[in-house]
Every structure is written in C-alpha cells, then in structure tokens.
Image 1 (cartoon, one colour):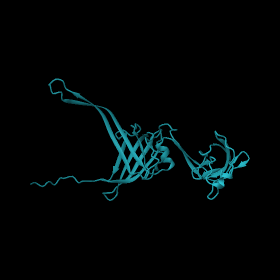
Image 2: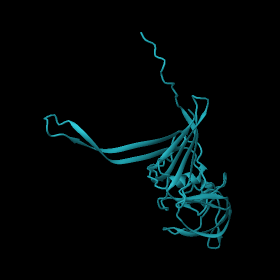
Image 3: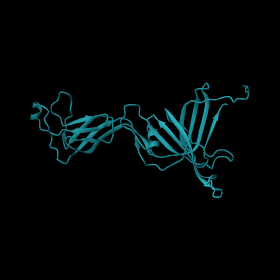
Image 4: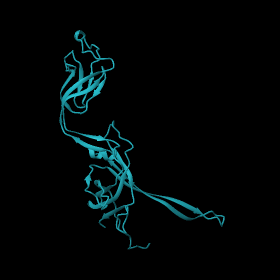
Length: 273
C-alpha cells in the first residue's frame, strides 16, 4: 500500500476567550472603545443564503442547471451570564443609569390593606411611614400590634388587613384605611442602584470582538472582529431558574461598506498557522 508524504497538517480548535462590544463610529466606521461583557459560554456566527434553483426544460430530465443566490445573511448569537446593567440594557435594547444613594422625605404611595405597594427605590432603610399625622407601626418579631410589614431589599410594604393573628392583637385598632386604599407618606434612605429601562433605544450599530484562545493548540490566539452588528431585543428573560441564569443576545451582521476594498464587509478572523 503506498505511503503518501503530502498529507496536510491538522489544526484543531476548541475556543475560550473574551467577548467585547462597543459602539461603532458612524463616520470612521471604527469602534469607539470595546467593553468586555463577562463570561460567555457560547458564541456563534451563522452564515445563511437564499438560493433560487433553475431546472432545465429541454431534455426530459428537469435537472438543476443553474443556481441564483438572492440573499446572504450573517447572524450572531451570544449567550451571556454576566447580569450587569450594561449587558441587560444591551439585550433589551434599552438604557441603563446609576442612581446615587440618597434619601426621600415625603414620597406619597397608595397602599392597600393586605396587599403590597412598592416604593420608588430599592434597598431602603430608616423607613418612617405616616398616614396623615399618625406614624404607623412596623412589624417586628414578638410585636402583636403592627400596621405594615417592610421588605427593605425590595423597597415595598404590605399593610395590615385588620385580621387579628392572636388574642393580644385583638385589642389593637389599626389606623383607619379606606377600602380603596390610603395615601401614605414615606421617609427613608436608599442605597446606590442601577435602573434599566427596556425597549427605549433605537437600533444602532455595534462592533463585536472575540479575543479567543485555541485551547487545543497551547492557547494560541484567535481574534474575530465583527464590523457591524445590530441586535434584536432578547426573546426571553428567565427570572426563575434552578441553575445559573443566562440570556441570549441575537442579531444580524450587516454589510459594512466602510471597510477597505478587497476585504470582508462582514467579519475577519486572525490566527496563527
């Protein structure tokens, strides 16, 4: 059996690395700085085409004799696990902002007996609740007479619905609460926090960069630059789960005519041999 000496050397790939994203300068076409998004267990580039096939009609075989490509579509899917405000806002095509810690002196909230009402901020402390000139009594362990229960982390209260939990409580008369709710005044302090408003931003172009390692070839570098990425709002945001939470950023790689002539208009890959 002959021995061949011209077999090609095999270079295998198993990737790890850092995914980065940044705004694309509409004038120069270059990225305006790139931000690492954190742990990404899965990133994929998908290239699809739409083709119309032609069948001959002269020889009785109806064989395909030509193909016309009518569309080229490039997509990217990124599975994210870093739930920072910037990532969530990008996936929701929204805006994020930091709210500095501070205090509130008289926030008015409609509250309802037996139901929960939320405050404007979360992670609250030093809470004082008043109904008119009357200061309401918070629930604490071992205290039978109380007007409301406070969730400091969530920034919410639940008003007492007047049901006596024990005999000692039956002598206590809570403040009169109108059947359709009562306007209460809140004073409290709150911690620094982020807010993400979803679906507020128009579609805009981003630059994606993958600074990867080929783990089967001594962590040699593999760099992928995606020049013009426009993401869709995420399809699903799983809020209850028995495992680590993930969300998926999906979108299209648009043709970038600002790229130099003779180079790809979509993405490039740089690697060692």
